[in-house]
Image (cartoon, rainbow, N blue to C red; front, side, top):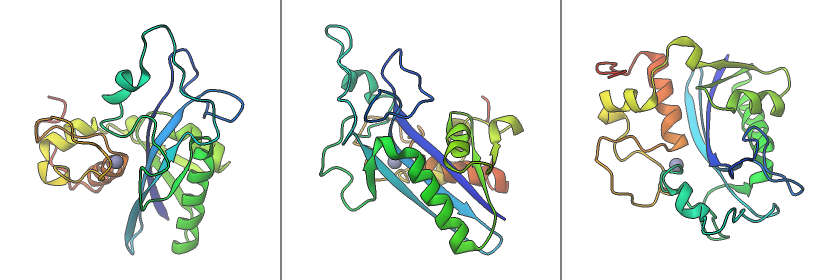
Length: 206
Ligand SMILES: [Zn+2]
């Protein structure tokens, strides 16, 4: 069995169904980063896939004076809101409309490399829904239903597991050192540490 942790960061214009991935024909959720990490009894590996709006409708300008870039900067924890062709250099970059394909590709690669059945693991959000759409019939575990604390709480109690460990694309944001940057690649490692019992939960929920 391979446990494949996934976490997606991105955003959605107001009034648009967040569960629907943006497509060339309709607005929807615009992924920016998919973090993944798999664990088996034999080993583990991790990585990320990044997204930009290549073949989908331009960012909604919304009501007058409304700037989605300002509005979503905080939510994206410094990731580029509307990345261009040269952002995310050196990484796998796909159009945001291909989020489900990206999840399927990671799943299939992990299944191939490990020769194992792959079980998705996520915490809340829409990742479980998307995993089921990407790989029909795949098993998914929502850690939120198993008492997993907020990643902020896991991180706050375990600075060594997160400080400075976010991926390089979160632009400098003035934050206290112990504040957890919501980087998907970092979040999956924090969730995995909690599952493994490696995370000190002192202060969790505080
Ligand atoms: Zn990141």
